[in-house]
Figure 1 (spheres, one colour):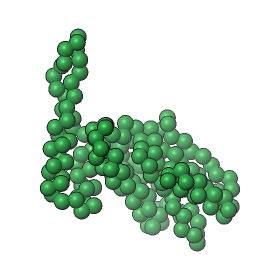
Figure 2: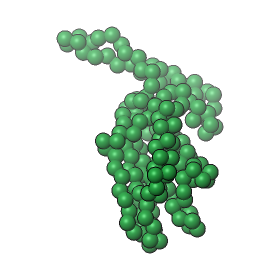
Figure 3: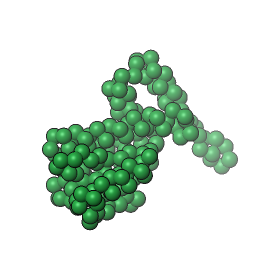
Length: 174
């Protein structure tokens, strides 16, 4: 679905003759660094009930890791952030958290902080799939600075960082 949406958006921008930037962003250690307070606040905002949040808190806080030291298990290391890899609930929780980034971008467009991709046609500016984010914006210093600021706000709140080494920016000459 994500690839189809990105292809449709680039095709539409090409038809409209619009010059834009496509940012493909990769989130670093996505499942390991997610802030639990941010996760719980997001779930609360989505309307999840108190009982579900309590169960989730128990599930997350009961996860620990032990490292083998000279062939012997070391002391338990208790997690304070992140999601369990392999847990069937983790991808859904992560998707809800990353959706907040999509909402921030849409809000920035609605508030005029980011320019619309086209003045008359509504074109989706962001596509989210797992830890991959594809974002389209105007190739202006103001828009690029605004995107960087939004990503920094999201990082501070959520604990999720952009891995710039695995990310790319492509100028679309349509």
